[in-house]
Image (cartoon, rainbow, N blue to C red):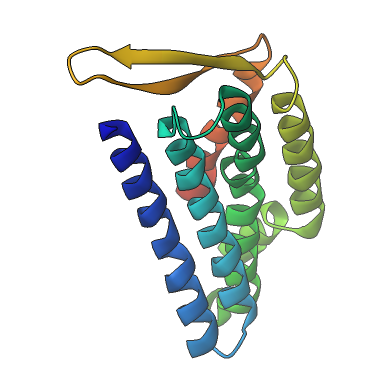
Amino acid sequence: MKFLIIGLFVAIIGIIPMVLAISVRKIYNQSEVSYALLLYMLAISLWQLDVAILYFDGIFSKETVFWVFKILRMGPTFMIPIVFYLAYVLIKKHTTNIKNKAIYRYLISIFNKKVLSFLIIWSTLIYIINMTGFGIVGLEEIEIPSIGSAYYYPQYGPLHILYIFHTGSFLLFVILH
Protein backbone atom coordinates (compact mmCIF):
# COMPACT_ATOMS: atom_id res chain seq x y z
CA MET A 1 0.00 0.00 0.00
CA LYS A 2 2.85 2.40 0.79
CA PHE A 3 4.32 1.83 -2.67
CA LEU A 4 0.95 2.63 -4.21
CA ILE A 5 1.13 6.03 -2.52
CA ILE A 6 4.68 6.47 -3.85
CA GLY A 7 3.48 5.51 -7.33
CA LEU A 8 0.62 8.01 -7.18
CA PHE A 9 2.99 10.71 -5.92
CA VAL A 10 5.47 10.04 -8.77
CA ALA A 11 2.60 10.08 -11.30
CA ILE A 12 1.31 13.40 -9.96
CA ILE A 13 4.80 14.89 -10.15
CA GLY A 14 4.91 13.64 -13.74
CA ILE A 15 1.93 15.84 -14.62
CA ILE A 16 3.68 19.06 -13.54
CA PRO A 17 5.94 19.31 -16.64
CA MET A 18 2.87 19.03 -18.90
CA VAL A 19 1.12 21.90 -17.11
CA LEU A 20 4.27 24.01 -17.43
CA ALA A 21 4.65 23.14 -21.11
CA ILE A 22 1.07 24.08 -21.94
CA SER A 23 1.53 27.37 -20.10
CA VAL A 24 4.79 28.14 -21.94
CA ARG A 25 3.13 27.27 -25.24
CA LYS A 26 0.34 29.78 -24.59
CA ILE A 27 2.67 32.50 -23.31
CA TYR A 28 4.99 32.28 -26.32
CA ASN A 29 2.22 32.22 -28.92
CA GLN A 30 2.72 28.72 -30.26
CA SER A 31 6.37 29.35 -31.25
CA GLU A 32 8.66 26.58 -32.48
CA VAL A 33 10.67 26.78 -29.25
CA SER A 34 7.52 26.36 -27.19
CA TYR A 35 6.60 23.34 -29.33
CA ALA A 36 10.06 21.80 -28.72
CA LEU A 37 9.66 22.49 -24.98
CA LEU A 38 6.20 20.87 -25.05
CA LEU A 39 7.70 17.72 -26.58
CA TYR A 40 10.52 17.76 -24.03
CA MET A 41 8.11 18.14 -21.11
CA LEU A 42 5.89 15.39 -22.52
CA ALA A 43 8.94 13.09 -22.61
CA ILE A 44 9.72 13.96 -18.98
CA SER A 45 6.11 13.23 -18.00
CA LEU A 46 6.17 9.87 -19.78
CA TRP A 47 9.44 9.06 -18.03
CA GLN A 48 7.88 9.82 -14.64
CA LEU A 49 4.82 7.72 -15.44
CA ASP A 50 7.15 4.96 -16.65
CA VAL A 51 8.67 4.84 -13.17
CA ALA A 52 5.33 5.31 -11.38
CA ILE A 53 3.69 2.28 -13.01
CA LEU A 54 6.27 0.02 -11.38
CA TYR A 55 4.78 0.85 -7.97
CA PHE A 56 1.26 -0.29 -8.87
CA ASP A 57 1.71 -3.89 -7.72
CA GLY A 58 -1.66 -5.25 -6.71
CA ILE A 59 -3.58 -2.56 -8.59
CA PHE A 60 -2.83 -3.79 -12.11
CA SER A 61 -1.78 -7.26 -13.21
CA LYS A 62 1.91 -7.87 -13.72
CA GLU A 63 1.32 -8.23 -17.47
CA THR A 64 -0.49 -4.88 -17.64
CA VAL A 65 2.27 -3.13 -15.71
CA PHE A 66 4.84 -4.76 -17.99
CA TRP A 67 3.20 -3.56 -21.21
CA VAL A 68 2.43 -0.08 -19.89
CA PHE A 69 6.03 0.18 -18.69
CA LYS A 70 7.31 -0.79 -22.14
CA ILE A 71 5.00 1.68 -23.89
CA LEU A 72 5.91 4.55 -21.55
CA ARG A 73 9.60 3.95 -22.30
CA MET A 74 8.79 6.14 -25.29
CA GLY A 75 9.45 9.17 -23.08
CA PRO A 76 13.07 8.51 -22.12
CA THR A 77 13.83 6.85 -25.47
CA PHE A 78 12.70 9.76 -27.63
CA MET A 79 14.07 12.38 -25.25
CA ILE A 80 17.38 12.23 -27.15
CA PRO A 81 16.04 13.46 -30.51
CA ILE A 82 13.72 15.89 -28.69
CA VAL A 83 16.64 17.53 -26.84
CA PHE A 84 18.54 17.59 -30.11
CA TYR A 85 15.55 19.24 -31.82
CA LEU A 86 15.32 21.84 -29.04
CA ALA A 87 19.02 22.63 -29.42
CA TYR A 88 18.59 22.77 -33.21
CA VAL A 89 15.73 25.27 -32.95
CA LEU A 90 17.58 27.43 -30.43
CA ILE A 91 20.76 27.50 -32.50
CA LYS A 92 19.00 28.01 -35.84
CA LYS A 93 16.52 30.68 -34.77
CA HIS A 94 17.79 32.30 -31.57
CA THR A 95 21.50 32.93 -32.06
CA THR A 96 21.48 36.14 -34.08
CA ASN A 97 24.51 37.53 -32.28
CA ILE A 98 26.82 34.71 -33.45
CA LYS A 99 25.48 33.98 -36.97
CA ASN A 100 28.66 35.14 -38.70
CA LYS A 101 31.11 33.41 -36.37
CA ALA A 102 32.96 30.10 -36.64
CA ILE A 103 31.24 28.67 -33.55
CA TYR A 104 27.86 29.09 -35.24
CA ARG A 105 29.04 27.27 -38.38
CA TYR A 106 30.43 24.51 -36.17
CA LEU A 107 27.16 24.15 -34.24
CA ILE A 108 25.11 24.14 -37.45
CA SER A 109 27.34 21.37 -38.81
CA ILE A 110 26.36 19.23 -35.80
CA PHE A 111 22.77 20.34 -35.19
CA ASN A 112 21.09 19.82 -38.56
CA LYS A 113 18.10 18.00 -40.02
CA LYS A 114 20.13 15.02 -41.24
CA VAL A 115 21.43 14.27 -37.76
CA LEU A 116 17.96 14.85 -36.32
CA SER A 117 16.49 12.36 -38.82
CA PHE A 118 19.19 9.83 -37.91
CA LEU A 119 18.42 10.26 -34.19
CA ILE A 120 14.70 9.74 -34.76
CA ILE A 121 15.37 6.54 -36.73
CA TRP A 122 17.93 5.35 -34.14
CA SER A 123 15.52 6.10 -31.26
CA THR A 124 12.75 4.22 -33.05
CA LEU A 125 15.06 1.22 -33.44
CA ILE A 126 15.98 1.37 -29.73
CA TYR A 127 12.29 1.63 -28.82
CA ILE A 128 11.42 -1.39 -30.95
CA ILE A 129 14.26 -3.41 -29.38
CA ASN A 130 12.93 -2.50 -25.92
CA MET A 131 9.50 -3.78 -26.90
CA THR A 132 11.03 -7.22 -27.43
CA GLY A 133 12.73 -9.68 -25.10
CA PHE A 134 16.09 -8.36 -26.31
CA GLY A 135 15.45 -5.10 -24.44
CA ILE A 136 13.18 -5.92 -21.50
CA VAL A 137 12.53 -9.54 -20.59
CA GLY A 138 10.03 -9.09 -17.78
CA LEU A 139 9.40 -7.70 -14.33
CA GLU A 140 10.59 -9.01 -11.01
CA GLU A 141 8.44 -8.40 -7.97
CA ILE A 142 10.50 -6.98 -5.12
CA GLU A 143 8.83 -7.47 -1.76
CA ILE A 144 9.62 -5.40 1.31
CA PRO A 145 8.33 -7.56 4.19
CA SER A 146 8.92 -4.94 6.86
CA ILE A 147 6.25 -2.68 5.35
CA GLY A 148 4.15 -5.37 3.70
CA SER A 149 4.40 -3.95 0.20
CA ALA A 150 6.03 -4.69 -3.16
CA TYR A 151 7.04 -3.04 -6.41
CA TYR A 152 8.25 -4.25 -9.79
CA TYR A 153 11.79 -4.04 -11.12
CA PRO A 154 12.49 -4.57 -14.82
CA GLN A 155 14.56 -7.54 -15.96
CA TYR A 156 16.66 -6.48 -18.92
CA GLY A 157 17.55 -8.46 -22.03
CA PRO A 158 20.87 -8.93 -23.84
CA LEU A 159 20.60 -5.74 -25.93
CA HIS A 160 19.80 -3.46 -23.01
CA ILE A 161 23.32 -2.06 -23.28
CA LEU A 162 22.13 -0.24 -26.43
CA TYR A 163 19.46 1.51 -24.35
CA ILE A 164 22.03 2.53 -21.77
CA PHE A 165 24.30 3.89 -24.50
CA HIS A 166 21.35 5.67 -26.09
CA THR A 167 20.13 7.37 -22.92
CA GLY A 168 23.72 8.14 -21.90
CA SER A 169 24.10 10.15 -25.09
CA PHE A 170 21.65 12.60 -23.50
CA LEU A 171 24.58 13.90 -21.45
CA LEU A 172 26.55 14.47 -24.64
CA PHE A 173 23.80 16.71 -26.06
CA VAL A 174 23.48 18.64 -22.83
CA ILE A 175 27.24 19.23 -22.76
CA LEU A 176 27.37 20.22 -26.45
CA HIS A 177 24.43 22.55 -26.05
